[in-house]
Image (tube, rainbow, N blue to C red; front, side, top):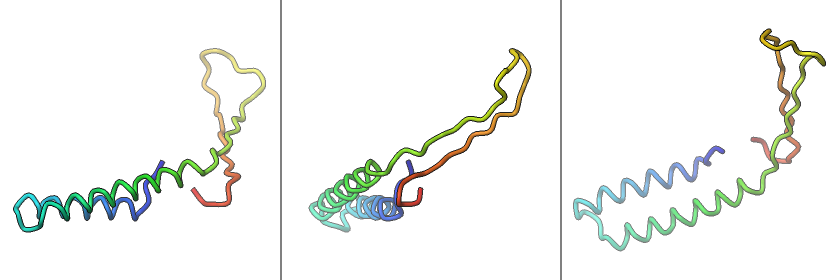
Length: 85
C-alpha cells in the first residue's frame, strides 16, 4: 500500500504544527485540531485503498520442475480495477 501525497503532506504539516506547539509558538488547541484533521484524512485514505481491487497474479513455469535445479519463473500481474495502482 502506498499513501497518497495528501496524506504525507498532512502528516508533515501536523509534525510542523507539533514543533511550533512544543515551543509555545502555537496554541495547543490548534495542534489538536490539526491532528484530528490528519486522522480524518488518514481514515479516508484507508477507505479509498480498501476499495481498490487486488491484482491477479499468474505464475508461469515448466510443467515439470526438478528439485534443486534453478529455473526461470515469470510472474504476471494484472490489475482489473478502474484506478491505477
